[in-house]
Length: 257
Image 1 (cartoon, rainbow, N blue to C red):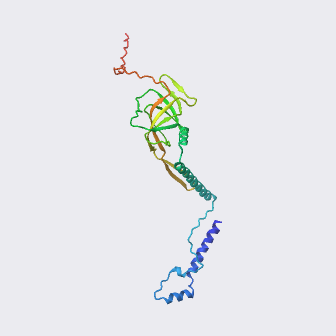
Image 2: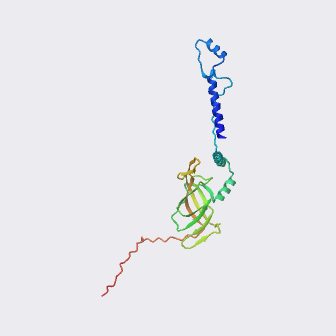
Image 3: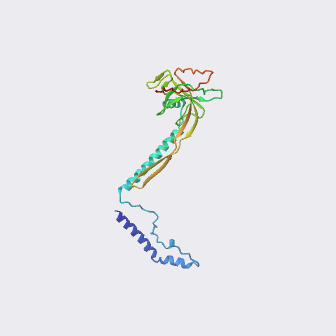
């Protein structure tokens, strides 16, 4: 079929060239000779039935090329559909109840903006917690900073309460949830919204002349842990005298006679 199509296109080109070489009709010659300075162009010599070859046909004798083109179209349509969904989510207006419910499903609650009079940052306490935000788990203690996926409905300097606490620990006790501790909470402050380093996605199909390169930067939110509640915190004993490092005394080896 490909050879027959090529021959057909060649015949069309040949007939177009032959028609250009023929002499024009007498009516066109009289009209040209009546003018003093005629301007002869190829468009005037073309017959009325002639249509220039203005489009290109691509022929393929393999079914794989057609399937590859269909796959590319499907991928492009999928990408456009995902982008449209993301755009619709960003444009959608949420009610306060919907915002609170969606934030609770992720694992946090927005308390409000941080005020100048608030003293949320405390000294280090020997207590740690394991919290879940979305599908990730973090082991945190007072004063730590963590990077999570972009959290919606919160801005910089907003105070958050992380509700999904899986475990609490201190030097004296450990509390394990089944799977969550209902009375425990971890307080945090949103420090910034940032972008992660670029990741290159490269796709290739060998022997198909298919290569696609894309870049992606994940949106992140930086949280600063300020307090952990739900467990007894031991008191840190601080004496007036500074602690001295222990000095090892050299051992005496008995000399053998």
